Length: 321
Image 1 (cartoon, one colour):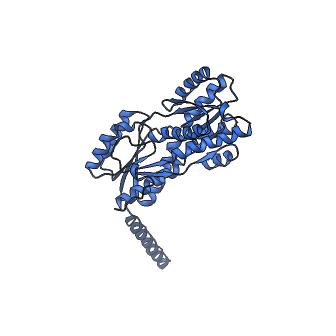
Image 2 (cartoon, rainbow, N blue to C red):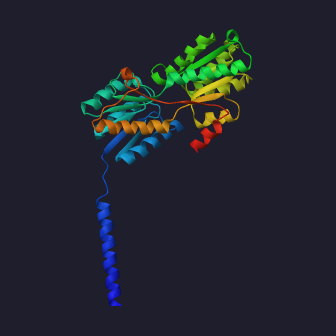
Image 3 (tube, rainbow, N blue to C red):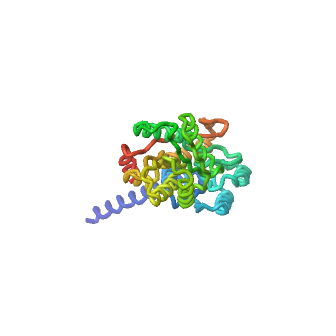
């Protein structure tokens, strides 16, 4: 009995020692990466953060997340705080690209690379921007709308469309309207172009005004889904169920509205993959490797987009569950 007890204690000691060694040799994080996010209340940015965190964890980095809450002052303060904390790299989805200059300069003084995920960089000297192929997405929306109009027998000269855009400082989202307008004008459509704030409530009011002034409008293209949701509300209030509405993002609420027939389509972005790509870019920078840009003069890495309508919306919704 005594021998069995000694044997058990010996085995237990080996197990404990082994566990202690195992804990000791676990790799420590390479460093901390900061992510200053536009607004974490949006599902889009929640998905981006998940992808970023998952990939950085695989690569051995810790992630610090700061929520700008759609406020310029918080964007500046949060980014500067993370720079002072000594993050290895800084990823930003900016609410206000116009104020990025001082942030980027402060980061570069400490040899911290700045990667932008979405929106745009203003005139700052950022290192890379990971962004959806926005112009192609706008073209895609107009081409799809033309297919719908053709099936309905609507002639180009009888077609009037509205565009609701993000502000010009949001370079990527704003350019979606450029892609749409390019195709619309080639087709001979009449285009009513509005530059707004990129928000649901503003889009709601603008739509009421535009439909009152130009009731001949047959469709709206919105450069994000929140604005498209505002258009849906306005059209419902004005009993204009004939209006075709296309958004941009692939947000959960927009997908529901497509399923219900209140929206025609949305151009889906892939924020989870954008987050992963931003993390990969951090690792490439910190490893001293070179970045291969899709658009060199703008330091852009372009991410693919796809059109979601009733034919594939159930698949898109399941992927987000």
